[in-house]
Image (cartoon, rainbow, N blue to C red; front, side):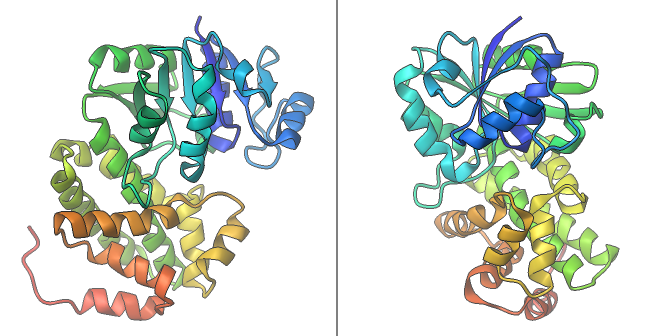
Length: 330
Protein backbone atom coordinates (compact mmCIF):
# COMPACT_ATOMS: atom_id res chain seq x y z
CA UNK A 1 0.00 0.00 0.00
CA UNK A 2 1.30 3.46 -0.93
CA UNK A 3 0.66 6.77 0.84
CA UNK A 4 -0.49 9.19 -1.86
CA UNK A 5 -1.22 12.92 -1.88
CA UNK A 6 -3.72 13.99 -4.57
CA UNK A 7 -3.13 17.68 -5.32
CA UNK A 8 -6.35 18.82 -6.94
CA UNK A 9 -9.94 17.69 -6.45
CA UNK A 10 -11.51 18.32 -9.84
CA UNK A 11 -13.08 15.60 -11.95
CA UNK A 12 -9.77 13.95 -12.91
CA UNK A 13 -8.28 14.17 -9.43
CA UNK A 14 -11.48 12.70 -7.99
CA UNK A 15 -11.57 9.83 -10.50
CA UNK A 16 -7.93 8.95 -9.86
CA UNK A 17 -8.55 9.12 -6.11
CA UNK A 18 -11.31 6.52 -6.50
CA UNK A 19 -9.02 4.36 -8.64
CA UNK A 20 -6.04 4.53 -6.28
CA UNK A 21 -8.16 3.88 -3.18
CA UNK A 22 -9.79 0.97 -4.99
CA UNK A 23 -6.27 -0.38 -5.60
CA UNK A 24 -5.72 -0.43 -1.84
CA UNK A 25 -3.68 2.77 -1.46
CA UNK A 26 -4.25 5.45 1.18
CA UNK A 27 -5.09 8.80 -0.43
CA UNK A 28 -5.14 12.32 1.01
CA UNK A 29 -6.90 14.80 -1.29
CA UNK A 30 -6.09 18.53 -1.27
CA UNK A 31 -7.99 21.45 -2.73
CA UNK A 32 -7.57 25.18 -2.13
CA UNK A 33 -11.36 25.54 -2.34
CA UNK A 34 -12.76 25.06 1.16
CA UNK A 35 -16.35 24.50 -0.01
CA UNK A 36 -15.14 21.72 -2.33
CA UNK A 37 -13.36 19.93 0.51
CA UNK A 38 -16.39 20.30 2.80
CA UNK A 39 -18.62 18.80 0.12
CA UNK A 40 -16.27 15.85 -0.36
CA UNK A 41 -16.07 15.25 3.39
CA UNK A 42 -19.83 15.38 3.79
CA UNK A 43 -21.03 13.57 0.64
CA UNK A 44 -17.97 11.44 -0.31
CA UNK A 45 -18.81 12.58 -3.85
CA UNK A 46 -17.96 15.51 -6.10
CA UNK A 47 -21.53 16.44 -6.94
CA UNK A 48 -20.49 19.26 -9.29
CA UNK A 49 -17.74 17.68 -11.38
CA UNK A 50 -18.10 13.90 -11.01
CA UNK A 51 -21.61 13.09 -9.78
CA UNK A 52 -22.40 9.46 -9.05
CA UNK A 53 -18.85 8.40 -8.15
CA UNK A 54 -18.83 7.56 -4.44
CA UNK A 55 -15.45 7.84 -2.74
CA UNK A 56 -14.18 5.35 -0.17
CA UNK A 57 -14.52 6.04 3.56
CA UNK A 58 -10.79 6.01 4.36
CA UNK A 59 -9.90 8.90 1.99
CA UNK A 60 -8.79 12.09 3.79
CA UNK A 61 -9.78 15.52 2.45
CA UNK A 62 -7.89 18.68 3.43
CA UNK A 63 -7.14 22.30 2.54
CA UNK A 64 -3.78 21.97 4.31
CA UNK A 65 -1.10 21.55 1.64
CA UNK A 66 1.47 20.42 4.21
CA UNK A 67 -0.82 17.58 5.31
CA UNK A 68 -1.33 16.47 1.70
CA UNK A 69 2.40 16.48 0.88
CA UNK A 70 4.13 15.26 4.03
CA UNK A 71 5.43 11.68 4.29
CA UNK A 72 3.92 10.54 0.98
CA UNK A 73 5.31 7.87 -1.31
CA UNK A 74 3.82 9.71 -4.28
CA UNK A 75 2.21 13.06 -5.03
CA UNK A 76 -0.22 13.37 -7.95
CA UNK A 77 -0.51 16.83 -9.53
CA UNK A 78 -4.08 17.10 -10.83
CA UNK A 79 -4.63 20.87 -10.81
CA UNK A 80 -5.54 22.54 -14.15
CA UNK A 81 -2.53 23.61 -16.21
CA UNK A 82 -2.88 27.39 -15.57
CA UNK A 83 -2.39 26.70 -11.84
CA UNK A 84 0.44 24.16 -12.06
CA UNK A 85 3.30 26.60 -11.49
CA UNK A 86 1.70 28.50 -8.61
CA UNK A 87 0.62 25.28 -6.89
CA UNK A 88 4.06 23.68 -7.29
CA UNK A 89 5.62 26.80 -5.80
CA UNK A 90 3.32 26.54 -2.78
CA UNK A 91 4.09 22.84 -2.39
CA UNK A 92 7.87 23.20 -2.45
CA UNK A 93 8.44 23.77 1.30
CA UNK A 94 6.58 20.56 2.14
CA UNK A 95 8.13 18.25 -0.47
CA UNK A 96 11.08 16.06 0.45
CA UNK A 97 14.23 15.62 -1.62
CA UNK A 98 13.73 13.02 -4.35
CA UNK A 99 9.92 13.07 -4.04
CA UNK A 100 8.07 11.18 -6.79
CA UNK A 101 5.48 13.46 -8.42
CA UNK A 102 3.04 12.30 -11.09
CA UNK A 103 1.79 14.97 -13.48
CA UNK A 104 -1.68 14.09 -14.81
CA UNK A 105 -2.89 17.44 -16.21
CA UNK A 106 -2.27 18.56 -19.79
CA UNK A 107 -0.98 21.81 -21.19
CA UNK A 108 1.91 24.00 -22.33
CA UNK A 109 2.74 27.24 -20.52
CA UNK A 110 2.29 30.17 -22.89
CA UNK A 111 5.32 32.32 -22.09
CA UNK A 112 7.96 29.70 -21.32
CA UNK A 113 6.58 26.94 -23.62
CA UNK A 114 7.34 24.55 -20.76
CA UNK A 115 5.29 21.38 -20.39
CA UNK A 116 3.76 20.74 -16.97
CA UNK A 117 6.41 18.23 -15.91
CA UNK A 118 9.08 20.79 -16.80
CA UNK A 119 7.31 23.37 -14.63
CA UNK A 120 7.13 20.96 -11.68
CA UNK A 121 10.79 20.03 -12.12
CA UNK A 122 11.77 23.70 -12.20
CA UNK A 123 9.71 24.75 -9.17
CA UNK A 124 10.37 21.64 -7.04
CA UNK A 125 13.97 20.86 -7.84
CA UNK A 126 15.35 17.38 -7.16
CA UNK A 127 11.90 15.81 -7.44
CA UNK A 128 11.31 12.80 -9.70
CA UNK A 129 8.54 13.64 -12.16
CA UNK A 130 6.53 11.06 -14.11
CA UNK A 131 3.87 11.92 -16.71
CA UNK A 132 0.62 9.93 -16.79
CA UNK A 133 -1.74 10.45 -19.73
CA UNK A 134 -3.69 8.76 -22.48
CA UNK A 135 -7.30 8.44 -23.71
CA UNK A 136 -9.06 8.68 -20.36
CA UNK A 137 -12.18 10.57 -19.34
CA UNK A 138 -12.76 11.00 -15.62
CA UNK A 139 -16.42 10.01 -15.94
CA UNK A 140 -15.46 6.58 -17.28
CA UNK A 141 -12.46 5.95 -15.01
CA UNK A 142 -14.56 6.83 -11.97
CA UNK A 143 -17.13 4.24 -13.03
CA UNK A 144 -14.57 1.47 -13.52
CA UNK A 145 -14.72 1.33 -17.32
CA UNK A 146 -11.66 -0.29 -18.97
CA UNK A 147 -9.06 2.39 -19.71
CA UNK A 148 -5.50 2.29 -21.03
CA UNK A 149 -2.89 5.02 -20.40
CA UNK A 150 0.90 5.54 -20.36
CA UNK A 151 3.36 6.42 -17.57
CA UNK A 152 6.34 8.28 -18.99
CA UNK A 153 9.75 9.11 -17.55
CA UNK A 154 13.35 9.22 -18.73
CA UNK A 155 14.00 6.98 -15.73
CA UNK A 156 12.31 3.69 -16.56
CA UNK A 157 12.24 2.58 -12.90
CA UNK A 158 10.15 5.62 -11.95
CA UNK A 159 7.70 4.91 -14.77
CA UNK A 160 7.42 1.26 -13.71
CA UNK A 161 6.72 2.24 -10.10
CA UNK A 162 3.85 4.47 -11.22
CA UNK A 163 2.64 1.69 -13.52
CA UNK A 164 2.47 -0.70 -10.55
CA UNK A 165 0.62 1.77 -8.31
CA UNK A 166 -2.06 2.74 -10.83
CA UNK A 167 -2.57 -0.50 -12.73
CA UNK A 168 -5.67 -2.59 -12.08
CA UNK A 169 -8.08 -4.88 -13.90
CA UNK A 170 -9.85 -1.80 -15.30
CA UNK A 171 -6.87 0.57 -15.69
CA UNK A 172 -4.00 -0.72 -17.80
CA UNK A 173 -0.75 1.28 -17.77
CA UNK A 174 2.07 1.06 -20.32
CA UNK A 175 5.45 2.77 -19.86
CA UNK A 176 7.40 5.15 -22.08
CA UNK A 177 10.75 6.93 -21.96
CA UNK A 178 9.40 9.89 -24.00
CA UNK A 179 7.52 12.02 -21.45
CA UNK A 180 8.08 15.20 -23.47
CA UNK A 181 6.47 13.74 -26.58
CA UNK A 182 3.60 12.41 -24.46
CA UNK A 183 2.95 15.86 -22.99
CA UNK A 184 3.10 17.59 -26.36
CA UNK A 185 0.59 15.15 -27.81
CA UNK A 186 -1.68 15.47 -24.77
CA UNK A 187 -1.67 19.28 -24.92
CA UNK A 188 -1.92 19.78 -28.67
CA UNK A 189 -4.80 17.33 -29.13
CA UNK A 190 -6.96 19.64 -27.00
CA UNK A 191 -6.60 22.35 -29.66
CA UNK A 192 -7.64 19.92 -32.41
CA UNK A 193 -10.58 18.85 -30.22
CA UNK A 194 -11.73 22.46 -30.14
CA UNK A 195 -11.69 22.39 -33.94
CA UNK A 196 -13.69 19.15 -33.97
CA UNK A 197 -16.25 20.68 -31.62
CA UNK A 198 -16.48 23.82 -33.74
CA UNK A 199 -17.23 21.64 -36.77
CA UNK A 200 -19.95 19.87 -34.79
CA UNK A 201 -21.37 23.22 -33.72
CA UNK A 202 -21.53 24.27 -37.36
CA UNK A 203 -23.55 21.14 -38.12
CA UNK A 204 -20.88 19.32 -40.12
CA UNK A 205 -20.69 15.53 -40.07
CA UNK A 206 -18.46 12.49 -39.78
CA UNK A 207 -16.46 13.27 -42.91
CA UNK A 208 -15.31 16.55 -41.42
CA UNK A 209 -14.53 14.96 -38.05
CA UNK A 210 -12.44 12.21 -39.64
CA UNK A 211 -10.50 14.78 -41.66
CA UNK A 212 -9.79 16.92 -38.60
CA UNK A 213 -8.60 13.93 -36.57
CA UNK A 214 -6.38 12.58 -39.34
CA UNK A 215 -4.88 15.88 -40.42
CA UNK A 216 -4.76 16.93 -36.78
CA UNK A 217 -2.45 14.08 -35.82
CA UNK A 218 -0.30 14.99 -38.83
CA UNK A 219 0.12 18.51 -37.41
CA UNK A 220 0.75 17.23 -33.89
CA UNK A 221 3.36 14.74 -35.15
CA UNK A 222 5.16 17.33 -37.30
CA UNK A 223 5.39 19.82 -34.49
CA UNK A 224 6.08 17.24 -31.79
CA UNK A 225 8.99 15.62 -33.65
CA UNK A 226 10.46 19.03 -34.54
CA UNK A 227 10.29 20.01 -30.86
CA UNK A 228 12.08 16.83 -29.73
CA UNK A 229 9.42 14.16 -29.22
CA UNK A 230 9.67 10.66 -30.69
CA UNK A 231 7.50 10.06 -33.76
CA UNK A 232 6.17 6.72 -32.47
CA UNK A 233 4.73 8.47 -29.42
CA UNK A 234 2.30 10.46 -31.56
CA UNK A 235 0.95 7.30 -33.16
CA UNK A 236 0.26 5.65 -29.81
CA UNK A 237 -2.11 6.11 -26.88
CA UNK A 238 -0.96 9.62 -25.93
CA UNK A 239 -1.09 10.81 -29.54
CA UNK A 240 -3.77 9.44 -31.86
CA UNK A 241 -5.50 7.58 -29.01
CA UNK A 242 -5.98 10.67 -26.88
CA UNK A 243 -6.90 12.72 -29.95
CA UNK A 244 -9.70 10.34 -30.97
CA UNK A 245 -11.33 10.25 -27.55
CA UNK A 246 -11.11 14.02 -27.06
CA UNK A 247 -12.50 14.87 -30.50
CA UNK A 248 -15.36 12.38 -30.39
CA UNK A 249 -16.56 12.02 -26.80
CA UNK A 250 -19.55 13.63 -25.14
CA UNK A 251 -17.36 13.90 -22.01
CA UNK A 252 -14.72 16.10 -23.70
CA UNK A 253 -14.76 19.63 -22.30
CA UNK A 254 -12.65 20.85 -25.25
CA UNK A 255 -15.04 19.41 -27.83
CA UNK A 256 -18.02 20.74 -25.83
CA UNK A 257 -16.54 24.23 -25.73
CA UNK A 258 -15.83 23.99 -29.46
CA UNK A 259 -19.46 23.13 -30.16
CA UNK A 260 -20.56 26.31 -28.37
CA UNK A 261 -17.99 28.39 -30.26
CA UNK A 262 -19.22 26.89 -33.54
CA UNK A 263 -22.71 27.98 -32.53
CA UNK A 264 -21.54 31.57 -32.16
CA UNK A 265 -20.31 31.96 -28.59
CA UNK A 266 -16.96 33.46 -27.64
CA UNK A 267 -14.40 31.22 -25.96
CA UNK A 268 -15.03 33.06 -22.67
CA UNK A 269 -18.77 32.34 -22.91
CA UNK A 270 -18.08 28.73 -23.88
CA UNK A 271 -15.75 28.13 -20.91
CA UNK A 272 -18.28 29.68 -18.56
CA UNK A 273 -21.00 27.37 -19.86
CA UNK A 274 -18.79 24.25 -19.74
CA UNK A 275 -17.93 25.17 -16.11
CA UNK A 276 -14.46 23.61 -16.31
CA UNK A 277 -11.03 24.72 -17.46
CA UNK A 278 -10.82 24.21 -21.23
CA UNK A 279 -7.14 23.36 -21.65
CA UNK A 280 -7.16 23.76 -25.44
CA UNK A 281 -7.78 27.50 -25.15
CA UNK A 282 -4.60 27.87 -23.09
CA UNK A 283 -2.53 25.56 -25.32
CA UNK A 284 -3.57 27.14 -28.63
CA UNK A 285 -1.29 30.18 -28.36
CA UNK A 286 1.58 28.04 -27.05
CA UNK A 287 1.22 25.75 -30.06
CA UNK A 288 1.56 28.72 -32.41
CA UNK A 289 4.67 29.89 -30.57
CA UNK A 290 6.20 26.41 -30.81
CA UNK A 291 5.36 26.21 -34.52
CA UNK A 292 7.04 29.56 -35.13
CA UNK A 293 10.08 28.49 -33.11
CA UNK A 294 10.52 25.27 -35.11
CA UNK A 295 9.18 26.59 -38.45
CA UNK A 296 6.38 24.02 -38.73
CA UNK A 297 3.06 24.40 -40.58
CA UNK A 298 -0.01 23.77 -38.40
CA UNK A 299 -2.95 25.11 -40.43
CA UNK A 300 -5.78 23.67 -38.28
CA UNK A 301 -4.29 25.01 -35.05
CA UNK A 302 -3.64 28.34 -36.80
CA UNK A 303 -7.32 28.64 -37.74
CA UNK A 304 -8.40 27.72 -34.19
CA UNK A 305 -6.25 30.58 -32.89
CA UNK A 306 -7.85 32.95 -35.39
CA UNK A 307 -11.34 31.91 -34.24
CA UNK A 308 -10.50 32.13 -30.54
CA UNK A 309 -8.46 35.31 -30.41
CA UNK A 310 -9.11 37.26 -33.61
CA UNK A 311 -12.86 36.84 -33.92
CA UNK A 312 -12.68 34.93 -37.22
CA UNK A 313 -15.91 33.38 -38.41
CA UNK A 314 -15.69 29.57 -37.99
CA UNK A 315 -17.26 28.93 -41.42
CA UNK A 316 -14.63 31.14 -43.03
CA UNK A 317 -11.92 29.23 -41.14
CA UNK A 318 -13.18 25.91 -42.52
CA UNK A 319 -13.39 27.43 -46.02
CA UNK A 320 -9.80 28.65 -45.80
CA UNK A 321 -8.61 25.20 -44.70
CA UNK A 322 -10.44 23.53 -47.57
CA UNK A 323 -9.11 25.96 -50.17
CA UNK A 324 -5.42 25.78 -49.27
CA UNK A 325 -3.02 25.00 -52.12
CA UNK A 326 -3.02 21.48 -53.53
CA UNK A 327 -0.64 19.01 -51.86
CA UNK A 328 0.26 15.34 -51.63
CA UNK A 329 -1.08 13.65 -48.48
CA UNK A 330 2.14 12.11 -47.15
